[in-house]
Image (cartoon, rainbow, N blue to C red):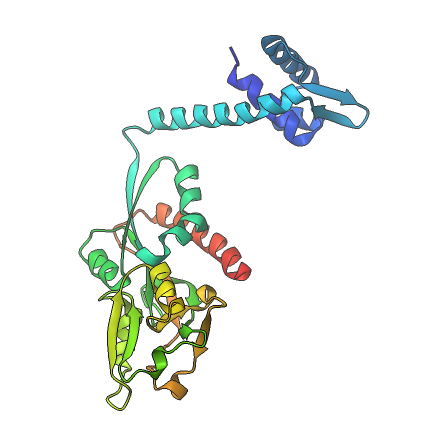
Length: 287
């Protein structure tokens, strides 16, 4: 049987490459740590470490065990949390724009779920206009939503610029009625398209209405429609269209912000806000 405390000490040795540093990490003496590694080697029947003047390195068996050690220690912690907080886990209801749910999962939400196991995070997706209404109705503890006005009662995460795009050397612009691909009703981006469309501009027809940015981009690349697309999604098969030159409604800068329900747990909201801000700053810089 592999004991968790032995595996934790083994992980410390593997990560530090030094028995003395590993002993400090797990708050044991070096001799006690060496004894633990010896017990682990006796249990597995394998030599797990190479020792020399420069420190310690893992043997082939040690590397194989390390992968299992991480999984077993993580599973042990999860089991303890689930049992300890089984009757105490607080539900946090979060609304996220449908078109960016994958992006936000990678930008702090997965980390929140794994780190704060005493909260039970549930995520629902919708267009931003609907998310605002549902927050006001008390359906959410917090939402991430897009708007063209800076939030008065929300925390700005970052600004996102959209551009009108068409297919590279496409023919859509030559038609009398301009075919567009837009996000669904109640999306602030779509709302601004119609709010800024003037009678003097070319008539438009919504050829595709979808919450999927991938579908919008495909419609553009296949020369079926033009669309307002976030800058980071613009591909080599697209060309950016100047609104003044082509008689298109101007697009303002849109902001992504976190809005919270006043009755939501303030500590949970602080943790959520901090993780989102830290991860989003890194992702925005990468783009």
